[in-house]
Amino acid sequence: MLPNAKLAYLLSTCPKLNSSLMSVMVKQYAQSKTVATRHYFELWITLYEPKNITQYNTDPGKLFSIKNTRLKFVNMEDNVVNDALQFYNASVLSNTEMRLIKSNLVKNGIKLNDQQIIAMYSIAALIKEYKKSGFKYVFIPVIIDYGRGGGVVHQTALIICIKESKFIYYEPYGLYTKYEKSYKEAVGILMNCFDGFLNDPVNYITYHDLLGHKQGIQAILIENNNKNVADYDANYNNIVETLLREFPKVKFVPDEDKNARDLTDKTLSVLDLLFNVDKFNVENLSEEKKDVYYNILEKILGQYYCYNSKTCVSITIVEMNKFFSYTENGDDIGEISKKIGDVYNEYYDKKIPNQILMNDVYKMLNLFRDVVKVRDLIDEGKQSIKICEKI
Image 1 (tube, rainbow, N blue to C red):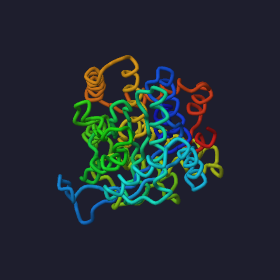
Image 2 (spheres, rainbow, N blue to C red):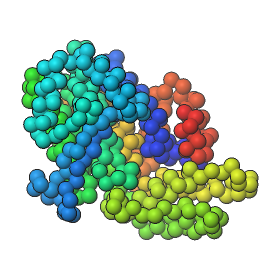
Image 3 (spheres, rainbow, N blue to C red):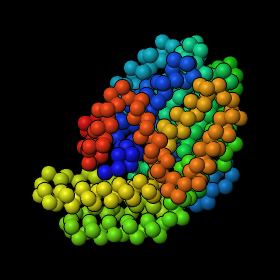
Image 4 (cartoon, rainbow, N blue to C red):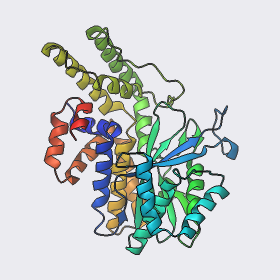
């Protein structure tokens, strides 16, 4: 089975692997003091979507706003973890600094309770700690929850330039919108909670505005994949017909969640199908039937490899690795912009651009100390859900 496709899918479904690869990606730049992070820490932002609005425009009343924030640490989310982090935060931050952050939030209409605000205090503590150590950037993985339910979340990231008090927000599409509404303004308002924390006003900008690019890798992928939707539909329908014939009593094809559905993505169905088929319990199947099942699973992975556009985790890891690599090499923003533009052009020029991404993310397994063990698990495993259990 396609190992790089399995890896990309695992990064979307296996938090242990996701956070581990994100961690080793950043760790390689620590010695040069290019970037620091709190390993296995994620900021989660839940958005509030204005009701009865179907068309995005720049009217502030028709944009996403911030509902709340929370954190995950080592893939855990509970008050015990929060209290432990806040104990550390309080040892780094003064009461004045924490009051400033809370006051800025309230001033911008964001009301977080004592548990929710710990995520923002934790970022402030990181900034203060690594400013003393002379690091250029602080990196924070950010998960966006659009607020519609259905498990629809999006991997994004925050890059904080400590010296310039610049908060650079990254999302893989480069569009900063969902359901035809923008959320880049909402994230900017949230980042304003750090106004004055570094003795300067917050300088907030999106990654793509900073580099002068109108869209990112994920937007290029979805545009290309949508162009090939006829081929995709034919292959997908053949797979579904085979599933119905071989496993008539199993409901593999999911019901459509119209509330959370991304109508801009015409090849999204392969991700839902892969999720359902991959988690199927094969223990009670005959060896012959197992072979049939694994053959179908491989065909679905092939569809995922060629056409899936929901690869935000893989894109974030790959592109952030390039950004920090160029920074470590001493490139300025103009030079980085050109190099990232060249990367984007490779995706534009490729017939199946997914291949570039999945090959790049697979190479990053070399960052693991036990790379052979990790690669063997992925290469030899068949069901991603079983691979994740062994990681």
